[in-house]
Amino acid sequence: MLLGTLALAPLLPLAGALRSANGELPSEVGIAPKRVAVIGAGAAGASTAYHLAQNAQNASIPTRIHVYERSSRAGGRSTTVNAWSDPSQPIELGASIFVSVNHILVAASKAFNLTSANEQSYAHEDIPELGVWNGEEFVFVMEGDGSWWDIAKLVWRYGYAPIKTNALMKKTVGKFMRMYEEPVFPWKSLSDVVAEVGLVGTTGVTGEQFLKEEGVSDKFANEIVQASTRVNYASNLATIHGLETMVCMAANGAMSIAGGNWKIFDKMLQSSPSISTHLNTSITHISKQPDKTYNITISSGEITQYDEVILASPLQFSKLIIGPPPQHTPDQIPYVKLHVTLFASPHRLSPASFGLADDKRVPQHVLTTLHPSEKDASDSESGPGFNSISIVASGTNNLASPPRPEYIYKIFSFHPIDAAFLSRYLGQPVSDDEAETGDPDGHVSWVYRKVWHSYPKELPRITFDEIVLDEGLWYTSGIEPFISTMETSALMGKNVARLVVDGWVGKADGREPVLKDQDWEDWRFEGAKEEGQKPLKARL
Ligand SMILES: Cc1cc2nc3c(=O)[nH]c(=O)nc-3n(C[C@H](O)[C@H](O)[C@H](O)COP(=O)(O)OP(=O)(O)OC[C@H]3O[C@@H](n4cnc5c(N)ncnc54)[C@H](O)[C@@H]3O)c2cc1C
Ligand SMILES: *[C@@H]1O[C@H](CO)[C@@H](O)[C@H](O)[C@H]1NC(C)=O
Ligand SMILES: *[C@@H]1O[C@H](CO)[C@@H](O)[C@H](O)[C@H]1NC(C)=O
Ligand SMILES: *[C@@H]1O[C@H](CO)[C@@H](O)[C@H](O)[C@H]1NC(C)=O
Ligand SMILES: *[C@@H]1O[C@H](CO)[C@@H](O)[C@H](O)[C@H]1NC(C)=O
Image (cartoon, rainbow, N blue to C red):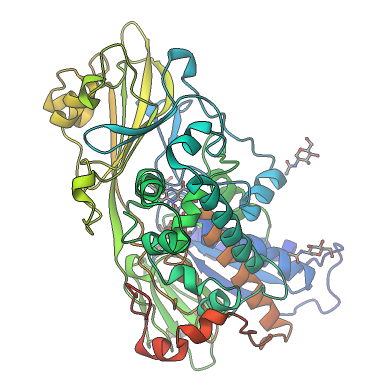
């Protein structure tokens, strides 16, 4: 079946690809189309294919783009599962949110007419929106529907720290946004562009150091910013870099797509007849040929030849071999192993399990931070035994008799969530079987577990993996230790798409980066670069 698909696929998109922007067939019919393989149909791979098809069409270059995906769906780490196996109840299992400054995702959602999901509030049940738990007490609780920054209470407890942090976040995001625009965009080297936009001093230090230098109080850093880095990147402030810390605070205009964020990437792949997507298809080998093309091998053993290959997955998880070795081989880096547990229950979380009086309600989103006694813990696994518990939706459990309304919860943790944990936090006796599989009429009616290599441990660093691994061989995942989000993977895909087509039309060498950043000198960057890609723990 697979062979059939592959044999036909090259012919089908050709008719569309041969048409130029105004729909005319190019005069030189018979011109060999450019052959591109994209490995991985996540945010990075889908965005590469989408933008490449557009750029190639604009340049009137016939192009055949084959996207290979080993799983049975597009979206990668953006995926949903159905609560109670009910297709009307999709729940995000991976990447759940993007924000209004995420221009690529926002523009694509509009272009594809996707609707954003409504965030549910439980204010009518007197459930506060958010609380930060340190294992002993809630150090902060946000009651209402106001925005994160719009809370007098924050100022009351933390003085100017929230305002300072907000200003710092805006300044940092402003530098990052330059990476979208000419003349900075497109960039051939992430290490160079990070220096050019002035972010080396932000990625090179821990969040803790960065906030301290900027005069943000320890109290605000520990209680609010760290709660955010723990829920977003499973990391304490001592082990995450300053830029990713600021990304965690850039939550304005948070949104998600109704039915699942993966729809954006699925639509990108369907956007052009020059793109064909091969699901259930693993790539096992990439091999450079003497004529500078690449042969890639799929799991069935079939070999296909391409002019350009884009690897749009972390190499270390892709189970493929590049041989002979390319000029640059991406580093193996530590990723977080995150347990995501979804479950449904008719019960609210037990106030007693959080030291609250019986008539109090546990917040909808329980974030966590370190207890003061753990202040010097450098280990990200310290803390109250989980990173967050949230009510992410509510719905009707139609498997119960009679059907009943329930809450759907999501837990992020470093360890499996067992019956004892669920019994404690629901304040109900949950049996081992129930915790494992759910009991439609029980205290826990549905359970779904997934262990992800969710994102890199975002340690401070000042250099990043190469984008051009070799002539005609491109790599997107080097952006993840800089920022790991759907948007940044999509941005890298758009960047690679542009570099590829610039290469075809003879703009291959581009411009040299302009090094404006004072930090550049301060960091004695060249020396650090030669040392390799070692994460730095502190300023040199
Ligand atoms: C629990 C969780 C929560 C997150 N929360 C957010 C969030 O709220 N907002 C946000 O923006 N980001 C979030 N992220 C991060 C975000 O999911 C990632 O940064 C982003 O999706 C990475 O996209 P990618 O395309 O680079 O990689 P991936 O999504 O990993 O895509 C790579 C694809 O390549 C395929 N592949 C790999 N090897 C091969 C091969 N040999 N042959 C064929 N196919 C192959 C894989 O199957 C996969 O589909 C979260 C991640 C997790 C896990
Ligand atoms: C393609 O060309 C059109 C019209 O010139 C332009 O609006 C669009 O931005 C271009 N797209 C890309 C991806 O360059
Ligand atoms: C991929 O495989 C799954 C089962 O593993 C199957 O259900 C699905 O139809 C397959 N999809 C394609 C496009 O072949
Ligand atoms: C989106 O909707 C608008 C109007 O509702 C329509 O004109 C447009 O064609 C739609 N686009 C897509 C991609 O469906
Ligand atoms: C590479 O692929 C081409 C076309 O499929 C084939 O002719 C050639 O023999 C392949 N080379 C190797 C080394 O497998």
